Length: 467
Image (cartoon, rainbow, N blue to C red; front, side, top):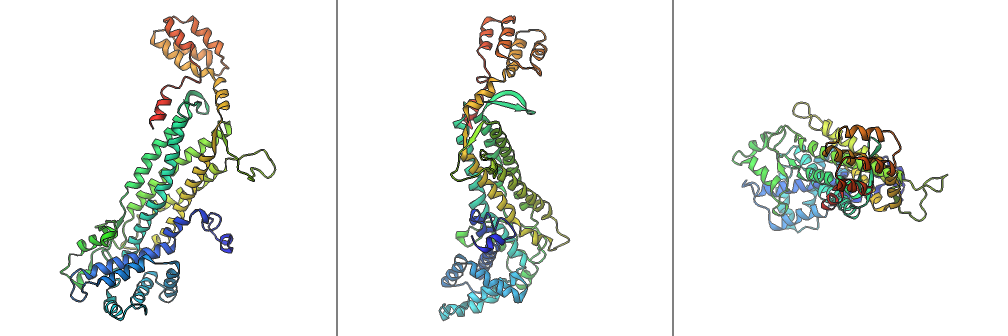
């Protein structure tokens, strides 16, 4: 562990840094800077094909060099841009100057240097900084969603499906309002969360990622002043929406905006992630409770300590860690979704510092997904505890008995069972004694007598297996 790791203000960059490497590369300032370079290059190359006589199409060698600049972009390059920023006091302008420097490298052929030098005033041409920034943020979120968030959620979906199927027939006492209730199966309870999580994942994946490249207040003012013959909205759409393989960015154009992209899509995305996290908080808390009841044991890890004074403890730390990080993530995600769509008049900078915390919100989410999956992988079903709990809860059979009684017209069926069972300790013998006295067909009596808390699970098993 480095000195930085133990002095970092955020635990995401300190204690948990080794768990968040993928996200750091995408959502850090370095990740943001690389996307800025990518956007500047895509715009620059596209401009060369726009038909302006002052900027003829770039050669294949020039295009290859510029794309390699993006591909090979490193943290050292980010530091070089930051060094320029110390003079400019403007980060996007520093990117422009750095990119111009990349067009004049001594390692380039003289012909290539000359070509790029002639054209370098078209780098960042007609763009406001926010054209570059908003598009870069969308690219960051695109990569984070595809490479980190959805794979992490998919791993949880796969695990929950595996548990739903494996434990489909393992009966478990339900608890509504904390009180004993109609039995379910462990697999069915996992299936409940699985189905919610799958829908939540679809919502995250379905949010379109928008970008605008329409100038200082969204009207293409500078663009038209420079060349009124170009269909600038169509040109911008080509850069924004074309596939990366065709030199575009693979996003969706925001056609109407002020200086900033309105960020409504960000609010939609962050709300979708927060809703997913809320579902998983629900799961983490339930599993914490089931571990407390003894329904699950946790696999031991050699050398691990549960308590500094109580040697017997195996704490549900993974689920607690997940719950805590989901809470932090959601607090940030909700602030992002509430704040970002608001901007005074055509522009204010209150969104800028907030946007720099997108990675923090997603980092806490990713950390929670990892903790939750780790906890799920440690669980071992305690069949004895499940069976014992069910055998102590014969009162739950009051529901099927009174329902059958009502089918056959027995008066006061609900009230009879309520008098026998509500708030009282009920035994198998108590229920069987009542069943023998009922004025219902003998076959129905035998069916009720065969019921136990462990086999009164309805369609839970088949529902779990179908998930």
